[in-house]
Amino acid sequence: MKICIILGTRPEIIKMSPVIKECQRRNINFFILHTNQHYLENLDKIFFDELKLPQPKYNLKIKSGTHAEEVGKMLIGVERVLIKEKPNSFLVLADTNTALAGALAAVKLHIRVDHIEAGLRSYSREMPEEINRILTDHCSDFLFAPTEKSKEILINEGIPEDKIFVTGNTIVDAVYQNSKLAERKSKILEKFNLKKEKYFLLTLHRPENVDKEEKIKEIFRGLKLIYREFNLPIIFLIHPRTEKKLEEFNLRVPRGVKLIKPVGYLDFLKLESNARLVLTDSGGIQEEACILKTPCITLRNNTERPETIEIGSNILAGTKSNTILLAAGKMMHKKSRWKNPFGDGKSSKKILDILVNIYKK
Image (tube, rainbow, N blue to C red; front, top):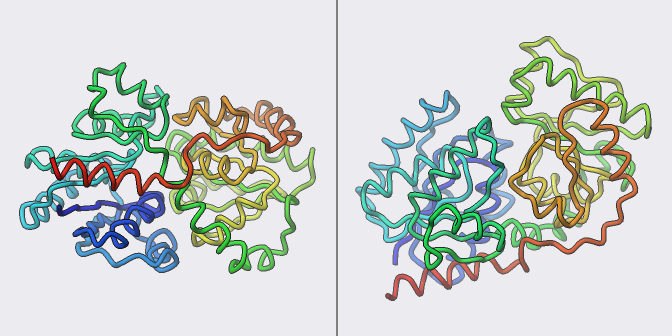
C-alpha cells in the first residue's frame, strides 16, 4: 500500500497530523503532497515544526489566488505528482480548494480517493467550502464520516452505505495529543498578560463575513457591545485575509479588541482552552472549543457542525450586533458539562485500520 496525503492549509496540517504519525508508527509507505495554499510561515511551517511532522515530499507552492486560479494550478500540479508516484490511496481532508482539486485529479486518474471528515453540510451555497465538500464527497471511493449525523447526510444524498465509515474526527486526536503539551510549554498568556477566563478569543476569516464592509462593521458593533457589557478584553487573532480587508475598508477595531498576528498551534490551544468564550466563524474552531470545554459563539447563521449546537457547546449568533450580544450573555452562563460528540481521540487509528483492510481486499 502506498498513500498520498494531500494538505495545503493550517487546519489540514493539524487534522492530518495524527494520521501522518499513525502511518509512521505502522511503517506504512506514504508521502505528503503540500499545495501550500497557506504559505505564510505562521500559517504553515510553524505547524510542521511544532507537530514534529516530516517535510512534504512535494510542495506545489500554489499560494493564494482566485478559486479558479488555485484549483487550476493545483489540478495540474497534483496530476503530475500522481502520474509519477502511482499511489493506491489518495487521502484528502475536509473542504478546501486543496481537497477538491486533489480529489478531482485523483479520480480522473482512477486512483482511489479516501475522504476524511466527509458528510459535513452547512446548506449554504454562499460558502465556497460547501461546494468543495459536496463535490469531494461525491467523487470519493471511501468516506470517513465524523458522526452518525454526517453518515446519514451522505446516505440521503445517494452514497452507498458500504462506502461510509463513522470514525470520529481526527481533530480530537490532535487536541488530545497536544493540549497538555500546550498547557505546559506555551507562554502566550504571560506574553500578553492574560488570565484564565478573563478574556474572549476571536477569529474571523470567512469571505462571506470579511469581504463585506457593512458586515464587518456590524460585527465590530457587536464586539463593542460585548466589551461594554462584560469589560473583558477580546483577543483577535487576525487572519491575513481579514487584515487586508480592514486596510482596504479603512476600518479600525473597536476599543477593547486587541489584534494579534496568527500564532502556532500550541499557543492557539492555550488561548482557546483558557478563554472565557470563543467567538469565531471557523468550523474547526467550533470543534476545538467543544473538545476543550470552552463555550463558543459562531458568527454565522449556519454551521456544518450541528452536533455542537445540539449538545450546547456552541450557539449561532449570526452577524447582527444585538444577536451577538445576546449570544454572549447566554454563553457566559453556560456550564461546560457537554460530552464531546466527535470521537475518543482514536480516529486516525480507525481510519488506518480501514485503509489497510481495504488494501488487503
